[in-house]
Length: 105
Image 1 (cartoon, rainbow, N blue to C red):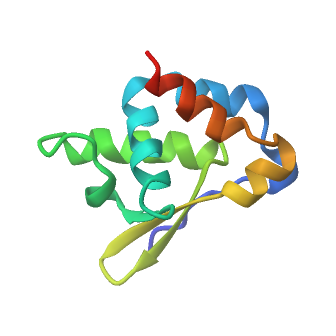
Image 2: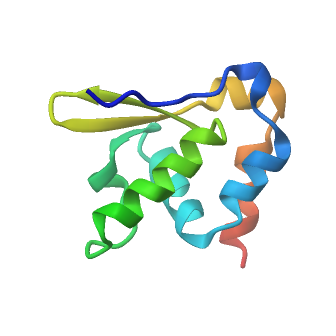
């Protein structure tokens, strides 16, 4: 069974979040997750229908290791939940600001 690595709240760093969201594909994944109450499977959150599964898995791993999402196995799917509350406790308003600014460009 796959074991996912999730950093503790106190181990989430600003540079990790910014680095993960610097990639346009990961930013689109986060927009998709945040727009859907923050919980989706990998395939539902995929910004492109024909993206390779290995590439998609890589992007989700980066988001997970940065502390932006929590991934849990539910049946045969991996469900991804945005760690909004924890991120907002550490960096108030950061996710909303990044998503808002990215829409303006």
